Image (cartoon, rainbow, N blue to C red):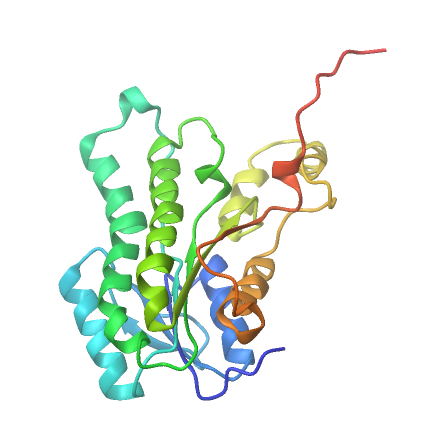
Length: 251
């Protein structure tokens, strides 16, 4: 495992699910990890600064506090995000704006205000959490998919503009990750065994993803072993995007 001792890492939305798994990977690697979220994590070894990442004022305070209390920043993980399930013709402007403000605007704000901290680091990196829904579609997820497409595109520009300052930027596009939220969704179906078989059948590796799978890739992208990788979106989906659907034509 790469040693992140002496490094300061911000993880937005790091109090639960994928964000928490990422945060704990960096913690195990020796980093000081600051969670920027609305609620604190259960892990007391993680630092916490209450932050609404859709608020520029909050983000400015976050970065100022990290500079004053921790002495700088080496890695920014933009993980915070929300999803709504509403057909396009029923989506309100308020719903659309809320998703965009957190998922896309939040990435912009943290990236913007982390710049002056990151450019002082010897090995600065930004890792944005996008989604395979930036590359394909699920019904009723139009706002979420559009926001994650924005994250992937913004990653390109960040890599381009910040590269000359020694800052790399990449994105991760997770597939189906078995978080408590998804577990609750699957539990609503009466034949859970069949549902699990159907979901696993989408993935050539034969299983659902774990939050730790995303944490491992984030750790690699932020470390020196990926020093020539920037401006990329790495799909972490168990081969799902490589599998073309085939019809069931019977015997």
